[in-house]
Amino acid sequence: DIQMTQSPSTLSASLGDTVTITCRASQTIDSWLAWYQQRPGKAPKLLIYKASYLHSGVKSTFSGSGSGTEFTLTVSGLQPDDFGTYFCQQYHNDSPTFGQGTKVEI
Amino acid sequence: EVQLVESGGGLVNPGRSLRLSCIGSGFSFGDYALGWFRQAPGKGLEWISYIRGRPYGPKPEYAPSMRGRFTISRDDSNSLASLQIDSLTTEDTAMYYCARGNPAIMGYYFDSWGHGTQVTVSS
Image (cartoon, rainbow over all chains, first blue to last red; front, side):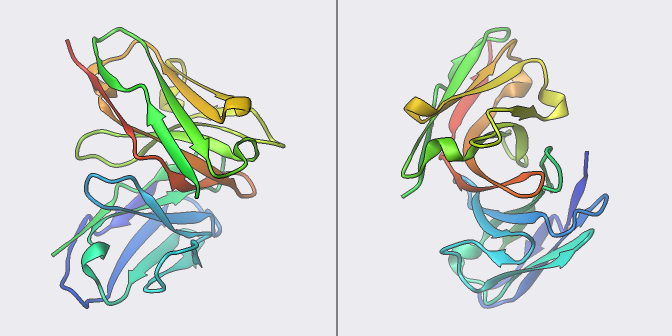
């Protein structure tokens, strides 16, 4: 299995801040990485696929970068509905795996 | 609008079986992979299985830790994906989600998710 490690586990931020979350893969996954947002009590929502492609309908304040083993998700100008937990997922092979999540809180 | 609706969860005794269902609408169901995931209380997302759509399928894949007790299937004529879980234990207590998969070279990312169905295993 490809292991995905996110950092930090928890991130405290304020409205208007720009925050960055890192996801590291245990082996190269090229650009086969997705990011999801999950608000409390809700289902996950796709934000970004192929490391940097914004999913349809997602705010442009979200951006992704990276390739190989290191990736970042940046959220610019935090708004109230941006708080929640963010997960990365690799899909380099037929066995997808997730990072443990990063909780973004006030 | 793409929609996925899960059902079939509930309170079950250890050792019993359960069959979860996922009905899709708003898209050409048979053309997409369908995946099942779970999330235990306060924990992260865990992939269980997915089943490929046309033209790759309906070949299933399972997470290594899920092989044996979980069986995925699909009925494209009814836009239905199912997950059978056998020999339930308390560790299977979780919210179970289905999601639509988009193919890449080898794997899938998941662009639409249902709201989930809660499975609680307790005597």
